[in-house]
View 1 (cartoon, helix red, strand yellow):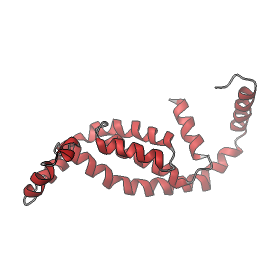
View 2 (spheres, one colour):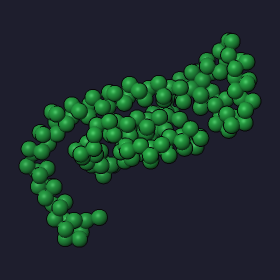
View 3 (cartoon, rainbow, N blue to C red):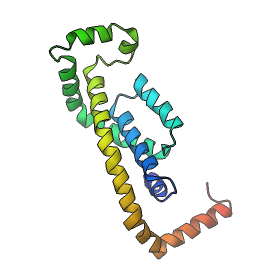
View 4 (cartoon, helix red, strand yellow):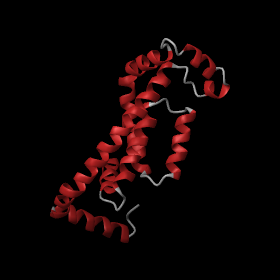
Length: 168
């Protein structure tokens, strides 16, 4: 647990741009809120490899939002049920799901459809909120952490441990 927390602080203090960090967490949020092995999740993982985002924060976001997803499942089911049973949309859905590619994606499942819509809708404000918070952290808090003597001694101990061959 502490190791993952240190990875988050290492990413926050790195030279990566704030959008790379917040996009990694937002992608992790999308993937974490949806059932894992769906084609659109696999596509997002491949897209994450192509885009220059922080993959460690994607994993942190995936783990965090996977835990939240179970709590939000009733909301996802209700959203999916509302969308899939909307009056006037039945002809569209019948045509849409008559194509085997779309059936393979399991979007006819209320939980998958609801979590897809919710995660994409929530990822946009999440991205901008995280981007704002990362910028504020770097402006105001990062400098405070650098001034704490015990944290500097931990940095020196880590460098010594790495140079002496004791580090990972």
